[in-house]
Length: 424
Ligand code: DLL
Image (cartoon, helix red, strand yellow):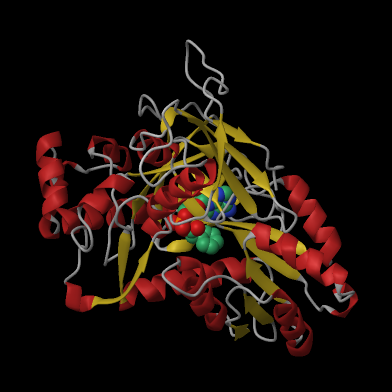
């Protein structure tokens, strides 16, 4: 689609999205009122900047269905995010949304040469996580034989891949590394018929791409998405592997300075802010994704006219992704500050174990009068802290008790996070 035509379509869809949320979602109507804006103020695409932002906390505050723009009886599916703090963030889809989303995934898979005759193994979680059903419907739409493998039991996954003649796989890049390791151990690599893989949902580097392509004999493509905008399928690499095409007929793309909210200069990095243009169930206006990227200005050698973003360059906030679960250091701080046996100083150490899984160690300092009540020795205190953290984070952490004063103090900001994980 040419630029003029695309902009015309975007504006038409933007006006519709804005009008729908204004009429159907009290949260948006209130926010628009506070910002002094009404749907009729949107006359050009640039007018999107008059609209207020939406953040993850808005979804939580309106849990579960408060931001839905369609009647709940028209919602045919929900998904929820993997976040750990408080309530999950819930998103809803109408039948039309499921169709649009499947089309988007189909578009991505077609772009990398998949279609009828391919056998597509979907090795991600099929629960509330959007990666499972999202990819599944898209893979069926292109006519691929789709294997809903889910996660776990890696030798069995490899057996299926060989027996079914799997040509394409979708999983997280960290799981792909584990799959490769297991295939090598079992001497199965030569028996695989894999051509391509789609990896996403967490950061991974060019080095990992090269490594996985070599070890598995595949071409590996980066896939970006987030639950608040359908799930996977938002941006995807073409065979050029030079940035991800972002489907801006469905999402209005802004890249802003996370601190000032001003658009960054052409090609500079900033926070990706997205507005839904084609959704019905849950329409998100100027959503602050927290993801840092940049818009690639040059035209893509593949000839597609949709804009491209670079692979993700980090996060605007300090969210950590530990084994696929979003962890905020502030949550850990909250737990720690409530336990009298330990001081408020802490450090988070992230490592990758021999199975390439993330290990989070929370280093804390023992207070002088630590042993009280039932907690009479180091082990009891350690297990107590571990339990308290698990209750909030939903993941197991290692807890290391240190002598008071061991964690470095600085006049400025404390360095809370030591990430020893090699960039995947
Ligand atoms: O992770 C959707 C998805 C599923 C994408 C399968 C790709 C494949 P959430 O659980 O809501 O949704 O997490 C979204 O994960 O804001 C990014 O910070 C991060 N993320 C997603 N894709 C990538 C990627 C799914 N390719 C959050 N590279 C996003 C780096 C990614 N980070």
